[in-house]
View 1 (cartoon, rainbow, N blue to C red):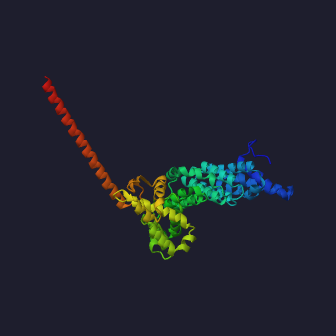
View 2: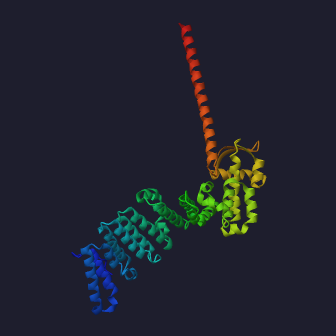
View 3: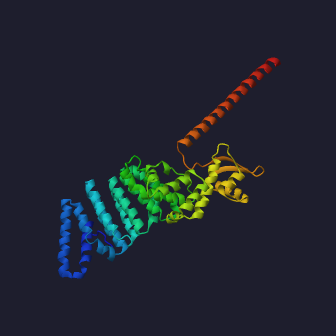
Length: 410
């Protein structure tokens, strides 16, 4: 198959119409094919003369199913480059959006067939569009294509620019929800990106602040999913899910109250509470896909950090042993695990069998944590002021002594 190149004065769009129509009617014989090709080319010319760009794109896409299956990838990319370029001819943002929707719908119809090429076509279309919302629509279509076509690795790098994209698109809350949820669905396909998936799920839930009960109910299933992802992730120990209305609604929900209780255990309680919950709800936890041994490991680390949050900053080995329900010889091993996970900074006093904590991670950071931080900063400020006063006092004493010595020498 020969690649389409504008070698004459014929408009590239008309060349595409001619090429695709000839391909579509090739099996019908010249007597049938030639009148049909001529008719389609005439319609295309009329659209171009009258500025009916949407109709032209629609006409060009008429044979898309045929060309998608019969032409080479190189030719296919060339054809759709010409089709996508038509959107630049319209002066109406609304018409450009409708054309983008039409092209996107056709490209995403069979995601498993040449998915990488289809993604390339969509991103080419994205770059040709000027209207911010049209760009958002095409980007979202590309994400769904990547999921369905199992080529998510091609779109993941773009997530680093999401914040700048949001500023550019200036989309509403509803579209933000759809975007965050779709991105999370892309990332969940990669186990190594579970933390990123959780981040975008949290962003999704955060958009429901201030909504009424009816709107909040839309987020119930995703709120449960977010809780499960938090509990399951071995490197997630801190979140603000308990402060989100979308999650808070689960507390009194007949179906999902236990999910909320599970989250509360992981964010505010210790290992013994989890073990009690697991005994009563083991089937539920298995249904969530949670592994009991993994949950115990995470709760032991969490419980150790909770012990370290005590104001004394000193944790007896015996208390760690009892709280984590481990043997004496394993105490230091779990302290090292907490240090390695960067959950706490501490020193082990083996002589006195105590862990001296200088810093530990807070599981939640709410009003109480802010008050604690305020108190610590006030104490630090007072200590600094005392040091400065002491230095000044010493300087005055030294200056006085030097002056007296000068008088004695004279």
